[in-house]
Image (cartoon, rainbow, N blue to C red):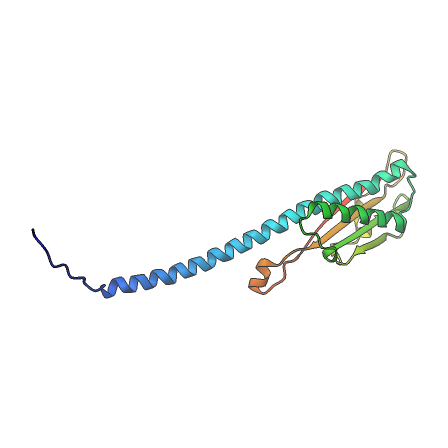
Length: 190
């Protein structure tokens, strides 16, 4: 039987340095990968909320538009009508969001009516909810979207803006605020 005396040789200085460099590189790559995962998760949550708000704002603005077909073309929205739309929006969000928080919700309903062709009446702007929704431009600046019907009436415009405050995963890490998600839908009335 041949027995060899195997000595454990110490790790060469070159290999020791390579292990240290690998650890540093792995830590840097791991940090960037973690940031990427947090950013992706945050974007996915916000896109999901945006999609839900898009569908709901489109539905609500069509409810407002269709009520004139059912009742009167010159029907003005009352506070009760706006409160009813607010209740519909809140209940819908409660059903579709896993953890709906009423303090994170905001609603803006705007309408622009006309007394004649090119003769705009004062626009209405009503808000509900705890969150203040940011509107890019007031509906009074969007009069060019209205059309004249075959009966010679300038059609009213309606807009519903919904906003919701989400978690701030990535913003907390980088020290900024990316929380509010909003959606608005505008429609030409009947």
